[in-house]
Amino acid sequence: MNALEIHALYKSFGSQAALENIHLSIATGSRTAIVGPSGSGKTTLLRMIAGFEFPDAGRITLNGQPLVDATTQVPAHQRLIGYVPQDGALFPHMTVADNIAFGIADKATRQQRVAELMDSVALEPQMGKRWPHELSGGQQQRVALARALAQRPRLMLLDEPFSALDTGLRASMRKMVARLLSEAGVTTILVTHDQAEALSFADQLAVMRKGRLVQAGHPMDLYLRPDDEDTALFLGDAVILPAQVENGWARCDLGQLAVNDEGRHGPAQIMLRPEQLQVATRVPGQADGHGSPAVVTECDFGGNTCTLTVELKALAADGQKRSLLVRSSGMQAPRVGSEVLVSALGHAHVLGRQIAG
Image (cartoon, rainbow, N blue to C red; front, side):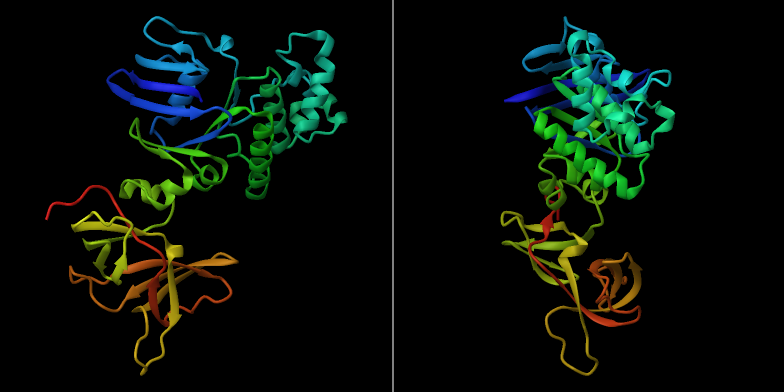
């Protein structure tokens, strides 16, 4: 069963279309991440769901009840939707406990409920007396989450909630929030510009571009099988190669590679992720084994892994030198200037529609 249904949503600001014909279904208890570049419409979509903005056309339903349609516009405070903004937006004149208690109508159980919520987000009881300015960024976000959970929302909206935190804290907060919301069975939507964060957090990934929803599905499906080059590059580093595809194989600058579409024939673009490429040391004077001869031109060291730029020795079909990104172990990465053989693991993905010959 789907908790949230968005159908044909449209919104413009003046002559500028912010959202165009958005369709999206979100399963009950699942986590969906909405990603896209700045100006893609992801925050506008979140505000429509929250009730802070209303669309010009379209329909939004939550648990089968209309929030917005041709005759209905339910205001934000009646939607029972939790919202955690980027900065937490805590009330500075209230203590931590009072911030969390805000909106809990039952005075008899308020204190107990606050204690339960503080424990669930790993805040010590004594912190209830602190003021927001006395908290770290991570603690403020946990208070904001507890406050949003206090009203037992039907849906939780997270608007870039981890972006102000340092890298290590972001990862731990993301895991904690995902676990907490899963245990509570709360359907969740995360808006973020961090692709890695979206891929690790979500059950469903929705990619937006220029006000349109261009692709939605399981994060691994979108990462390995994006519909087009823009989506492929937005979700991470990618090697895009022109190829001639025939009967499940592609002829390209790396030789002949297996592809994941046996029905495609003719010119196309294929995609490999850098981790699908591997390099082996090339011994001068010896016959080349499996792989295409190349030279390492750059090495971007990142600790346990590094990203190599390798230049193929053979000229591409257009007469130019072809450079590729390869992900390698930081311990075993070849030095700049090394001669290597480049080969591919698994299947290459055929992008988009068939290109006219």
